[in-house]
Image 1 (cartoon, helix red, strand yellow):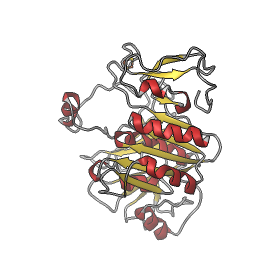
Image 2 (image 1 turned 120 degrees about the vertical axis):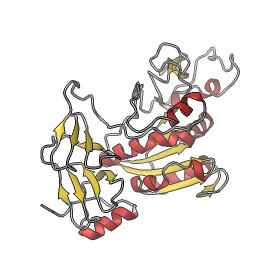
Image 3 (image 1 turned 45 degrees about the vertical axis):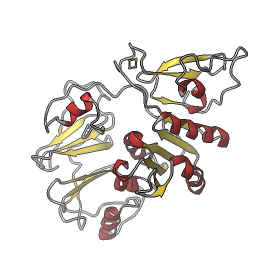
Length: 346
Ligand code: FES
């Protein structure tokens, strides 16, 4: 049975504009996931906050595929690239569902899982194949079993109010903000993005970024895509034009520091996801520590990015120490630190 896709919010992606134009609808139930058939471009799955839909004619008509599924929100979908009739849907706080017939019937795969265990289906790893470990991973074949620990540490926190969020990333940090953008949109927040990289070949998924954000500014060091410069060259303008109320950032230390200084100066609450070398990933080795000033300013603690991080309040990171190569750099001043901005997260 085919039915029109109900109330959808507009996305700045040509495909979705086309879809919306085709079905003649608009509204407030946002699309949170799009999954494309690996070989038949006319077949597309979309998940909104409430249902999963499928089109077989490039968006002319849609079929609701939610029969047999729980009412938990679908937050991720994956199509088996070898057997595309096999579709997976990961739901928020319930289970992963599997369909062998292109979504007509779903089977819950929660046996053996604690409730709330499954919140996502891992469909891709993002990495740069440099170094022996990453090169080994690059050699992995489809359906090869990998032993993975994660997710590690604490994730970004979501604001309760429907506010405007600017997501800033540079280099590898970009991979972490796409899921964040998806979650923020699903919660009714406005998302804008600044995407920075050394050059065009390192700009991560610009089309996907466009789909997820109201506005996007791409900036590259060599000017090969978007504007030439660094993310800090465009953040003040991007923040002002988007009416930004919260900034999320991910990327290398120097970039995070400049973003932090901007946020502190502008009194904009922020969260940053740090990049640190991790040996154990479980909190044992302390190779990943970040100096974080205590709330009362009496000193700082070396917090583990893999356990207490990787997301920190940039107003409390002891940047002089963390960004210095000197092992004894920047001790705690005898009088303690000045009062620390205590915006969230704690
Ligand atoms: S990686 Fe070992 S404590 Fe963080």
